[in-house]
Every structure is written in C-alpha cells, then in structure tokens.
Amino acid sequence: MTTPLRAFGPLEPTYTGWRKAAAALGRPAVDLAARGPDEMPVTMSNHSHRENWFELLTRPLWGLAPAGDAVPDDLWDRLAHAVARALDPGGEWYIGDVGPRNQRCVESAALGWALHTVPERLWDPLAPKDKDNVAVWLAQAYRTEVIDSNWRFFPVLAGHGLDAVGVERDPAIAGAHLKRLGEFHLGDGVYEDGPGNRVDYYNPFAFHTYGLLHYRITGDDRFVEPAAAFARRFRSWFAADGAGVPYGRSLGYRFAQGSLWGALAAADVEAVPWTEAAGFARRHLAWWWDKPILEPDGRLSVGYGYPNSALVEQYLTAGSPWWASKVFTGLLAPPDHPFWTSEAEAPGPTVEPHPPARAVHVRDAGGHVTRLNGQSWRAMMRGGKDTYGRLAYSTLTGFSHSVDGPGLEAAAPDGALVFSEDGRHWRGREDSDDGVVGSDGTVTVTWQPWEDVRVITTMEASLDGWHTRTHEIDTARRLHTGEGGWCVPRDGHEAAVANDRVAVVSQGIRSEIVDAAGNRCAGLVSPMPGTHLYWPATVLPVLTGVLEPGRHLLRARIFAGTD
Image (cartoon, rainbow, N blue to C red; front, top):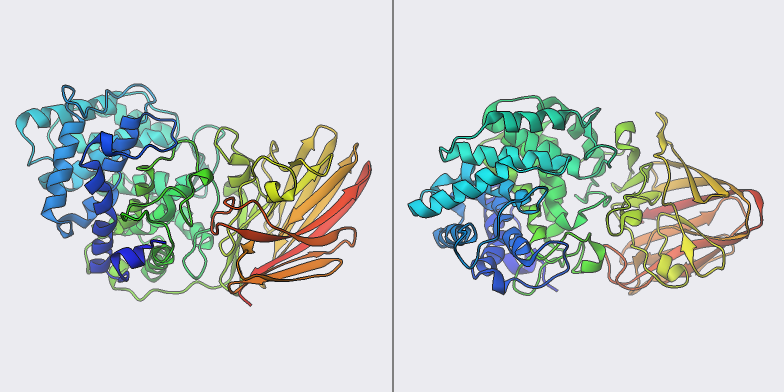
C-alpha cells in the first residue's frame, strides 16, 4: 500500500515542509498529464476523456501555484507546454470549446487562478500564438453559462486570470455571478449549493475558499464575514487527530476539507485565533499523510481512505482528486505569518448546534467528532442516500455505502436505521424533510420509508463518546428492523454479544450498541467488502427486531472510542 509518508517522506508542519509536499503531490499528476490525453487512465466518469485529462493537468495548480518557486523548473516547463497544447484548437490535444454548463469551465478556475498567481511560470514562457489560444479559451469560459451553484465562482476566477495577462473582459459578467452567489447565503456563514441544495464541504472548499481568494485579489469583502462566521462553527467538524467528519458528496477530494484554514491565512482574515487555524490545517494534512491513498506511481487514487472508485460520485475520475491541493492555499501567506509561526493549539470537547447546516457536531472527551445529521439525501448523486441521508456520521469510524443484494450485509447500516418487508431487502431514510436542530444539541428528523410508515427520530450526543437515537414509529405494515452502530476493521476484531448489546474491538477502536428499550436483539454482521470509506473489510454491531402494525418506540445507545 502506498501512502504519502512512504512515497514522499515525513510531512514537516512548516511553511517549507508544506511547499515540498505541494510539489511532491503535484509532480506525479503533471508527469502523466504532460504525456498527453492518450496516456490518461480510463476511469468511470460522466465527462469525456479529454475533460478528465484536463482535470489531471490543471487541478494540481491549486497547490503548485501557491508553492511557486519550490516547484522545480522542469515541472513548470512541461506543465506550461501541456496547457498550451491542450488549448490549441488546431492541435491533437485540444480539449474542446467551453459550452454552456460544461465541465471544462470548472478547470478554467484553476487555470485563471494560476495565471494570476504565477504568470511568470504559465504565461510568460508561451509563444505569442499560444498566448492568444489561452486567452481566447479562457475568455470563452468567462462568458459561458454555468450551473446555478458554486460554479458561479469559476468565471470569476477565470476573469482574474484574464486581468493578470492583460485581456479585457466585461466586469458585469463577474458582477452578476457574485451577486447571485450572495443570494445562496442561508445565514451564519452557510451557503446552499444552489437553490434548495445541500450544505456540505462545498461551503469550506468552494464558497469560502473562492470568496477569500477573490477578496485577496480585489479587496471585495462581501464574502469575508460569512467565511469568518462559518470558520468559527467549522472547527467542530474536525477531530483532535485532524480527521474531518466524512459527510456529503465529493469526499474523494480528501484533504480539500481543510482548505478554508489556509484560505483564511492567504486573505489574512483571523476568523479564529491563528493558533487554532494552524492546528486544524496541520493536523488535517498529517492525518491523511499516512493513509494508503496513492497509486503505485505516486498519483492520488480515486476513493477515500484507500483506492475504491465505488465510493465516489459519477463525476470523479483519475484527475479529480487533485482538488485536494486547495489545502495548500495557506502557502500564499508569507513564512513569517502567524499561520506558520504559531504553535498549534489542540481543540477541546464541544457541542455545536448549527441550524443552517442542519446538524449538530459533538467533539467528545476523546477528541472524536460525531455528526448528528438533520439534512436529507441528495438523489442526483451516486451514493447520495448514504453520503447525506444517514442519521449520524463519525470521524473515528467513517461510514459505509449500501449496495444491491440481500441482507444487512448489503445494507451496511452504520449510523442508520433500516426497514424491510421480507427481512432481505432493506430501505432506510431517503426522501424526507430536513430535520430540526435544537439549541440543546438534539436533532429531530421525520421520515417515511413507505407512505404508510412514519418515523420520528430524535438524536442527542454526550461528551463521553455515546449518542442516543430514539425512534417513534407508526406503521401500517409488518416490518423487520435493523439499526447499526459503528463499523470497525474486520481483521483482528474481537466481539462480545449479549441479548441487548454487542461490543467489538479492532485495531484500537471500540464500537458498541445497546438496546435501551428492551425490544430488539443484538448481533454482529460483516458488511459487503469494499463498502466502507476507511477500511476494505469491516464488522458492524447491529440491533434487529420485528414490528407488527401499530405504534412502537425503539431506542439505541451507540459508542465509538479508542478506550
């Protein structure tokens, strides 16, 4: 298994160490992409092969541009040459014109940002014809129609690239996008990702990171206070060991989760004390540094805790993971900035209700974070009912994706309650309203797995690593029930099962579930291998039972910790 630690050596938690890390992570992508689109691996994607290759070529720029002259000259030379060929409409590598709502516009943001940040590396070496081609293509991206979401930042960043290289543009286009982006603000620093859409990591690594970079360039501060407000809440999403709570789509971008902390430094916005921002950023990248997330040639793999393309959305391909490079935006702050010179401060226990984000995050005394989730699922995304619709999520134990097949082994209901009419095919929380987040740290969700089955679930967590789920169920049909605690690695596990509880320990992690209402049986299942974000094979403590038509009350207490 290939980890960044084994491939690139120890991660130094310093300005110099992070510059080296950005260059090391970017090189394998550029080395492959610079050989042309025919060398790009074929992977699952809803985009064209050329678009996927352009991701591989441009997304490393999010880290390479801030790293600047720490990136070797030969790498910059090959990158600039490949970009020129990619945007030559008469050449064999041309990626195509930017059409309305087209994926190519996404990568125009990385290119525009890099042209603004390091024009001496990407613009100045180009021949006049190549400069014309780049300018025409980027201007096309600036003018194109985009999806009504965080995508509206892409033309804005493309426009900053045009400004940097002296190409005129209509500022009203960017102005309209920025105005519309402001309309997505729900309050307390939270943006919905387009009308009626979800609140997830696109807040920190898209809305707020882009907004702060825009502020750094222009002084337009309309997004600064929302970013600062979100950052103060966002602290509770991170465990003491650096893990971000896995939740929502695009988890395959991995350590992009921590980009907001560096973006605050790049914009010199002290939303939280620099000792805290530095700590969250450094611990987060360090958490990833020893995970087996690389291909044998050093490229970032598609997956999360290990290579597994079954766990990502339909739009993630072999070039997509380098959005993780956004974590390096803090390199835009000088080495004497407090973000780099401060001693990292460790976070303590907290209970953080955040109604606009539709969740409560609890960092317990062991430093692990549990998300009590009120947000509903995202139907259009592959795996959306698992990435958005589960009742709880954990930094220590991750979560699973359900797959087709019979039994709880296929349903893999960690952090979830599922129902079945035949005991073989299971259904969990899918279509539902968003939950109610209480100021007392509770989350209440009402959902209907069938039209004649109504469930009201109330969750609360404590600082000792336990959380409680209470389900009031009104059913007109006979149902089997299955409720999962937290998964642990299968290899080396030891379990103890009693009538009303089961505890399992593996690789230093203990998971336990207790039937607090006395009407279910405890057991242990082995979810289908390859369904879990962290580990290829797992075991899961569960409670099972049968409900006759009528009203019922189920209650479970769930624990995860390193005790």
